[in-house]
Length: 102
Ligand SMILES: [Zn+2]
Image: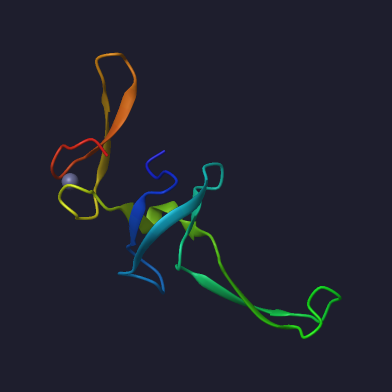
């Protein structure tokens, strides 16, 4: 996966374009993620026993992974992510701008 939990990402498209936030959850099967503060969904809640007043609930909705990019901690730009094989055979993510592993 190009995006991992706790990555700082920048939104490239959609209504929150230009904003950045921390990845809270990734859904690899759907190619989607939830990013803190991004893509807020307002939901009108019905009155229930737990929530007798009803009202508006706000929570983050999922965003398509193709619409976000990891911010590289070294060059602090949205990184084009590549993969490289380490000496022990495991794979690491790299920023294609500065070649730093991220
Ligand atoms: Zn970089």
